[in-house]
Structure formats: C-alpha cells, structure tokens
Image (cartoon, rainbow, N blue to C red; front, side, top):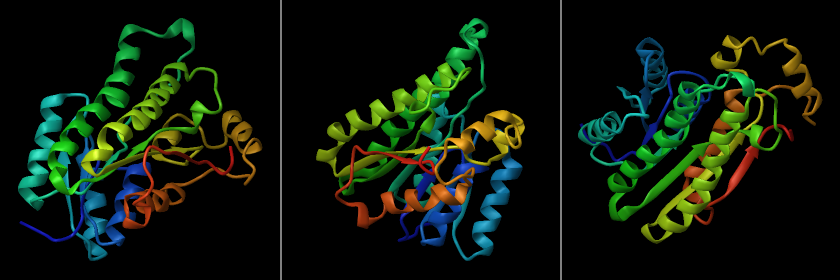
Length: 247
C-alpha cells in the first residue's frame, strides 16, 4: 500500500496524549501509524476511530526500549506506506517513587523507555526520512519546570529529553530535519486516572498553580503537535514549548 499523504509514526498512541495527537494529525490528512507496546485493543480502537472519520491508520506493535522492535516498527511502516515524514516520540512510562524506594529496576525501566526509546526511534526516523527530511516532536513534561516530590527519576528522563531535543536540532538541521519538544502540564489521561490523580490533593495543588485554573486534556496538546509538524513551522527547531495552562 502506498500513499501521497504525510506519514506519521506516533509512539505510545493507543491512549492518552498519543491517541489525541494521532487523531488530530489524521484529521489533517496525515496517514498514521499507531504504535503500541501492550494494548492492541486500544490501538485498534484508535485506528478504527481514524478510519471511520475518513482517515488512514495502521496499528503496529513495538516496545520502543528494544532496538530490534523499533527497527521492525519502522520497516513495517515503510513497507505499508512507502515513506515517512513525521515522528512523534510520545511513548513514555512513569510511576512516582520517593528517593528511598528507588531501585535499579525502577531507574532503568524509565530511562530505557523515556530516553533510550526516543533515541532508538529518532535514529530510525533519520534513516527513513532520507534526503527529503522530516519533523520530529518529542513529548516531554512540565514537571521539569515544577519539581514535584516522588517524581525525581521521571523528571530526570524528561529533562534529558529536552537536552536531546536541543542537541539533535543542531545535528539534524543540515539534513532538513526539524525537532522540537512539547511539555504538557497536568493532563487528564488513562495513566493519570490509574494513579488516582483526578480529585486528588496533587491535582488540586496543580490546578491552584495553573493560571487557567483547570487540568488539561489530550485535545489541548494535539493542536500544537499538528502545528509543529506542519510547513507553517518550517522555521522552528530546537524549541521546547510548554502546553500547560501556564503552570
């Protein structure tokens, strides 16, 4: 199958911010690869929503922390669509842990997905883009701007992502590849609900510190990702942009 549409891989797109970005890009006529690590049912649901709205999408399994699986993700994308224009590095994991409870497994789990996974995916994207170049958007977190107890390792992974974005912008500019990062604030997703965030004291503190006085939603993040991948953002690279209601 080939297409003239812009082709986009969105990692971790079976739910939350990733799913929101995938659907928003599809609405702008991008062909979407919905990457997932574990939940095929949710990934297929996102694909179904995109297709019912008239878009084109395909779900592909890959654990981004494993280089061989990332290579497979990109090879299957190229086999299906023939080319690649955009990568959204959204896949990420988090779990709060106080300093005294941090283990070797906890540390490596988060860094392997949130930092190494982004590295593997970006390496493959650069090869897949070819001479035409492309656009990459990394999804970070506003937690790097507002330190929060228990999130030290998660915050460290997202701070690393900001540095990678800036350095790679200098490395990849000559290849006509733009790379930027978005820092979402508090966003209502399946992940935050699983942590018991809605209605919690932590959520109330966050809302109190947010000038717009509410939590965010994937629909608040997606339009910025659409803009950054579009030709309208052709002069923007190496930027780290918060989408956090002013948090």
